Length: 312
Image (cartoon, rainbow, N blue to C red):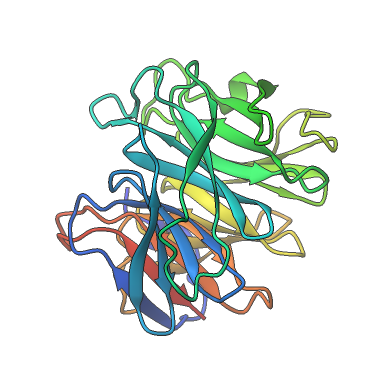
């Protein structure tokens, strides 16, 4: 599946920097959020540890660990210095969370200039019916309410982080992996909200699309496919102000998708001089001139864990 550089046009070379890489293959990095300090929060499958990575000095520190889980997935900001994360106990054999282990945790980071021992992830909602929570986004008008995707069922759950209430915001067979997946048994992966649309990536169907939604995250129409990938494995992504999507390709790439669906490869495998070892998620700086990319790691090629890469 590592054919993306041959299948899509390659853009002008970006400059890439490996900010940090975890030393052990078990330290899989799943997602990220940018802090006002310039530091980066990353979620991991490393015993459900949440880390900060400092792009300036290349250091990484454990912020907190969520009890009752061993994997942190999607993350979204729900208030000043406050973030929600999706979590569970990961079963690699089934590519899912253990039954009954799915939950949503929240944490108030405050200032990350120094490590605060009192910072702690706390469970605010349990989703025993969920199978594999993945991407997450908060509602712009109600940021304490998050949407979180279940990659195995295709459901988009809505979770109120203040009272723990959970319901289904969107249920569409188009988001499920299907009964006989040929590539990977994962449907909807990343989700983001932009200008009244819920953007989604679908790993098995190799696409990025969007739904028109209301203020509470309810779909107002059917899935509109923006781009169908010729190869690769769409993971999480970022949406720029003009609607351009910057998506992580888990097979080793960073893809740019214009609002009209035109696709171009910004980076593939080691085209930038930095090996993209299973990219998982993307964020853009405020000026949209810097791309933050997490790589899951765990490949035999590198033999190390995940990490954080900056591209300009």
